[in-house]
Amino acid sequence: TPIGRIMGVDDMMAELMRLETATVSKKQDEAGFEVKARTYVEILSGVPGDVARAACRSWSKREKWWPTEAELETEMRPLMAQREAMRSALRYAVRRAEQSQ
Image 1 (spheres, rainbow, N blue to C red):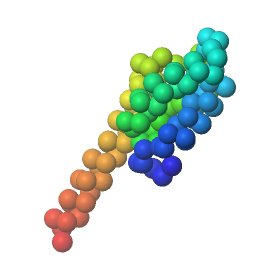
Image 2 (cartoon, helix red, strand yellow; image 1 turned 135 degrees about the vertical axis):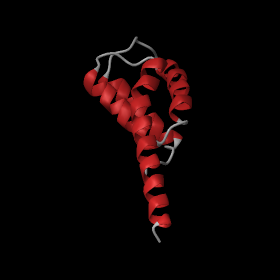
Image 3 (cartoon, rainbow, N blue to C red; image 1 turned 90 degrees about the vertical axis):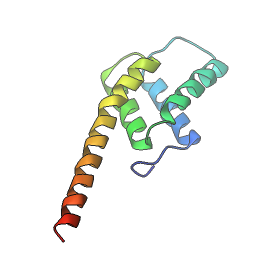
Image 4 (cartoon, rainbow, N blue to C red; image 1 turned 90 degrees about the horizontal axis):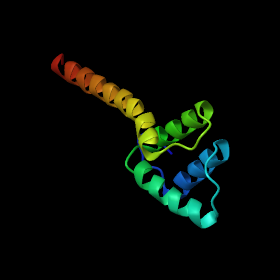
């Protein structure tokens, strides 16, 4: 997924399956995982794909248990803040460059 683009559902499901493989969660059948995954797809569909992927992967490297919705959102918050800071800095640099011409 290019930086800044929302992941497709198939990519999100693959990332969630990777997260489930790397963490521990309560036992459930395939249908149960599907319901859980759809809930998380809704959360991830509101953020750029690279942020969603980075949040899932950093969680799985650091934590043992499957994240709650709130934990995953908390994991994404600083990544989104960094992105916004970079966007603001770029906007400022563009304005300065335009004013100096």
